[in-house]
Length: 485
Image 1 (cartoon, rainbow, N blue to C red):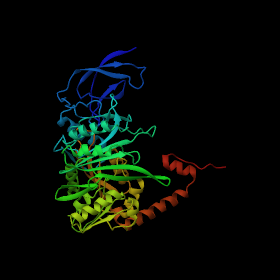
Image 2: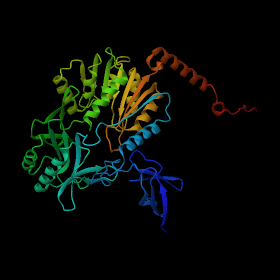
Image 3: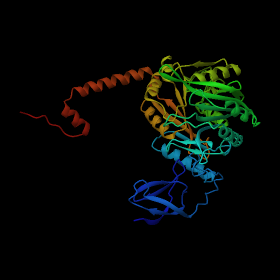
Image 4: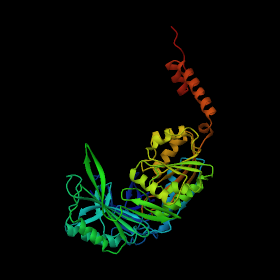
């Protein structure tokens, strides 16, 4: 039987959902803010959703107008219904909670974003059919596997909404079937739109090389007068037993240029870089400052992407190595390095572990790492310790994996010294973090390593001389008497 009850929101989680306590269990409720009270229906037989919000009876003073027609269905924005000051406090508290178990480091707080609207320089969209069976584009939700159609987004560059109107109309006229991952049928997989200061790139990802009406789509985009300089098709083609991703330039030169902080850099259709260019430069510059890079330092930047961080590092260090295994990113690094006349940056086009093995212990002073959401692998950590740099500068968008990796590295000789947070993705649940880890003497000094190894071997030897029962007694602090016969 369904009942009704009033619940109060205790706090926000990192995705902007309110936390409610019912029967000593915590539930995450969308669109519910701290100190608000709401009426809920209670249905104990519904195991997936035992409590459901009916209506808010007491609103928070921090609640604001989302000012977005997609809020509530779009999976991107988590904090659009919340005052920005409250959002920042929530994210700051989240970081503090995650790292509360770690000790002896300095937390330098969370920096606000300069802009909370139109800050994104990239949109990754997926094709689908609207209710009217028109082709439209939207965001993919990895949790539900659904695509949420959008016609506008206030987070992305202000040119986005106009391009979407042109693109949706052109695709509908062309009647290109969206790709279905289940049936493996259809043509259009996704659309990527990249924004630079002076130009725009549109990338159409398709199932195979066939793209009907590509001329009409390209013509419509160019006629929008939005400075679209490149229209590119990316497709998969079988090569032996594998599928190889290729690209075909429909208009333009196949890459574009952007500039910031005195650097000009190249961006290709398949290369990867962050969503917030200006915010990214701020984080990179502050990471270099927190690491206290010296003119004599030799630095290795792993996962170098299109090379923005290593190019900035080249201004401070004597030698910079940029490790990047992605071929498209590597081409961009090479082009940008020549464009900016940088002579102390060396590209290493290998996997990270292979790169570590190319150097000897003590060759590198500082390692920078900006891994994926999964964090650093055990192999990365172990080979890092063998390389023994004085510092590791870890830049992450996932506080959970950063905290785990930081703890694991602390057991291997690297201590967290500084932690700084940045809001590079306002209105979303993402927080960017810089962690500065320093090697303890046991990592840097080979003599200490030898003493520790000898001590360990000695302990093992002594342990083996004890019987099984004696080792058990020693471990659990119990008495042991040898049986006498």
